[in-house]
Image (cartoon, rainbow, N blue to C red):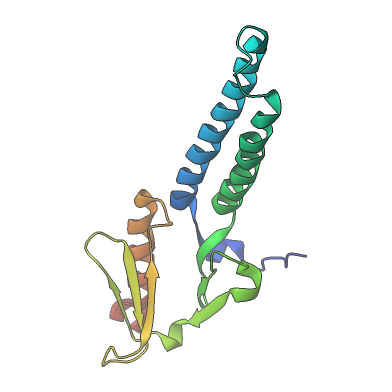
Length: 160
């Protein structure tokens, strides 16, 4: 059962919606293949070499599975910025594999020029840390994520 969020107004949630778009397209293509197989089966009496309508069940079932996966990627969080730190949810089993990186653990943050990778350094020598791919996040949300993380860890934000 999901826990109740105590202060949802104080967190920023970033989903895998950028990654979900390819799954939505895949579900649409599989559904189109299934409907096409069903539609061509009407003409089996004219051409018995056409596939049986039961063959449409395979792409339609895969379309349902792919659409459910895409819906989950669209709804569920990938990164959550909270007052405590950054919650990171993996692709598989996100509830069990969630990792919380406290703001106190992060010494320095880097975002590459294309805003596709976020690096959280744990020490000043940049010898340990976490690399996070930002490609699952929609492209227009990546700059917001970068600004939020960099703004939280900037010297003016920590001193004031």
